[in-house]
Length: 265
Image 1 (cartoon, helix red, strand yellow):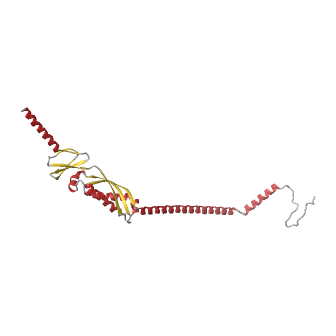
Image 2 (cartoon, helix red, strand yellow; image 1 turned 90 degrees about the horizontal axis):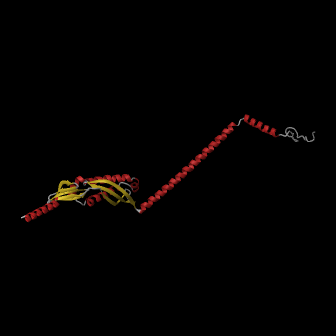
Image 3 (cartoon, rainbow, N blue to C red; image 1 turned 60 degrees about the horizontal axis):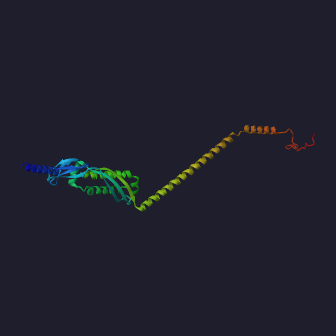
């Protein structure tokens, strides 16, 4: 009798363990659980941790709600019909409060069915609004517009856009050469303009200097008066007297005839 009780207790324990195994489920960290009952999606969303379900009636599909990264490279025509290949990195996540709707309407392959086409469509639509040069010079503006369009597309399908980063714009070899030639021409034009400005400044400096010298000569000329001339003559005579040794010249000239004074004692 006791042996039979042990067997029955063991069977019951095994049944309890099996029932616990089949009736419990664990939702992993960074995920949400979609509860299915006979294949139908229930409105209940299971959070992280252990949960109980009806064995063989209910099962749980787990969907990651952490930030995911999608890198894409798309080729499209710019506004001026230049072929542009854009490399972009997109960070997005599934809305934790709508994983059941996502699973019901889209399924687990939402990355292929929704995310990748939405990125490609957004990039091509925004790229077509700018010329090739504007894509480079207005990169932050382009990135903001792509983000705005992509956010609307992902939100429609229960996903959240976290961030977008345009990593590179790649153009054709012919366009790159044209850009290089244009930059070289602009640099040469800038150098020529600087040289022209320098020459102009130097010429203006020379004109200013000549004007200053002319003004100086004019002032000096205005300062020469008859009194000043007479004063200068007196100064010359005084210097001549200082150097005179007291001897009269032997020959004189002027209004009177020359007289030889060498014989006068």
